[in-house]
Image (cartoon, rainbow over all chains, first blue to last red; front, side):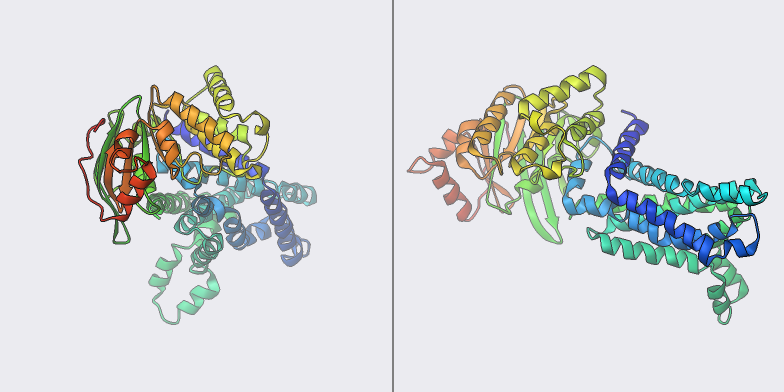
Length: 247
Length: 249
């Protein structure tokens, strides 16, 4: 069978796990509830008198830091803990196919979750005349952001049998990727580092690259950044899966 | 069909296999015996491509496991020691997944699934989640997925573990009938199983093959003529490797 057919079969199985799992529905509800609270209450959506989803997109890098690891921490650590990794990797498939199949299934689930916030889009369209092109760009940014976090979670999940450790590691790495581009942190760093160095570090931050999407700008450099982090993390994920077999 | 040559393996610096070699041909049922920790499961995991040995080669139906892992794995049906399968899946979905991965489609897929459901008597539990099954049924689900593509080579790590006497009898009969045409390796701690099912047995101790022969030959090496006496004698004393290559040594 060709690569795509195998990846499709693995993706379908993983999606089936989400659809049959109560945890997935708890995740969806938690995500939508928190996104709503952060946007409408803490974000002061109505007080701003601005028909845009800027507030919603502003919160996304921070909200997904916790939700994506919570959803994805089981991906490989559970396979390792239950021993099903032995079943999976003795099937006539390559570890890469398993890595990609699992990633795509979880990414699809995350994109569905994010897309279910569509009532917010309807709300701003009812209340005013938003720039729907910018909103669409924001959603594309959210999908890429979620995929980037997810690829990191896939990697950390393959490093341990313990889901809690996978969760904490993922949150820390994703948080770091945020903080190095977060202005209070970069302002602090400015006391010790040259502006060029700070700019260089901030270039590795998801925030720097998500910013353009938030403002409705689709820049190929941002796209390349997100795709590169995903590919690199999944490459390491593949190595971690191969090494995980030995223990 | 199965060719294992000079396998060496160590975990965290501790040597587990010290040069295991043997062949299994079509129509052979090889009993794989040894005390716990002797290296049986490690050898089986290397044969199935789950582990990579430090050195040595495994070839399945002419396909080298290191060079053509997918080709080699296509020919194998494997039931791992813990019969680990996806607990959250229903039995029928799990078998369907196994069939899909084995490139079975349409009517051939339906027939293959039907065949293993019959062989392993899974009809009553088809719509149940695997996590809700008894150990015996889980074992049979594991066996069913290993058989779904009618492989040439079967590797079964303690397939009768957790089964009641009737189920054990059924599985042994099944292995005997499958062994007419396939190459089968199965590990067990139950020595009567070896006598009733295997055409040949290998005893592994401390990572070495310490005996290789038909159950009758092995029994004849002790005064009592009992396989368990032979097993105890050979696995307690200092292991010595005998000539272990050749399918019908």
